[in-house]
Length: 114
Length: 110
Image (cartoon, rainbow over all chains, first blue to last red; front, side, top):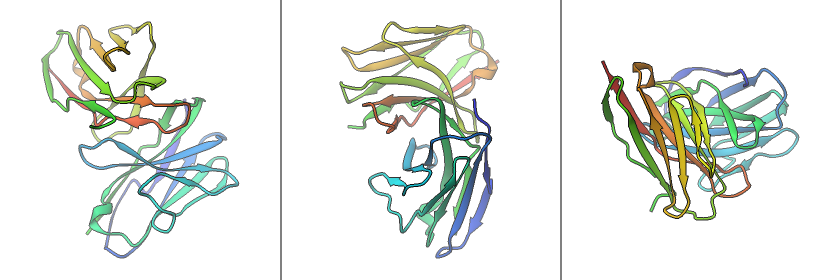
């Protein structure tokens, strides 16, 4: 398994502001993933972050809105920019350590935008 | 039609009973299947993979029906600690794009 931490665990933000979420893994991993989970909804992949290259975004998500950094093999950040109430959600980072399909998740960041 | 569909529940089940729920997927070429468990206000955690021949882990049995395009999860002798949301996950191809169901909520009552 992997030990993954996220900061902050929760935040309440004003619309129009930005929040950067940090994800730290206890060992080096090639790929890190950022998901969003809205109440009662399934997980939606925002982007995949590789170290040393630009993140790959899924349909419906763009770099200007969700810029991602991956400075090394144990750390990544996701920024939610110019927030609106629709961005209120849980944001989760994950890694695939054992196999490409087995993912371990961080505890999540609960974001409320007013 | 959603790519992965689950009955949201909740399934209210007495302790000790057997409960089963299914998950249907739309892409017949899907390669891999998983059940994850998510406790309230916690992150998802892998429960078990679903193999073509079925998979059993203690009280939990997962099965795949490719002809009807669904996977199932059976929990025997249910415990209070089994209360959680069970997420069905499908890998439609060899990429990383896992497709997640919205989950089935299970409540085990004493």
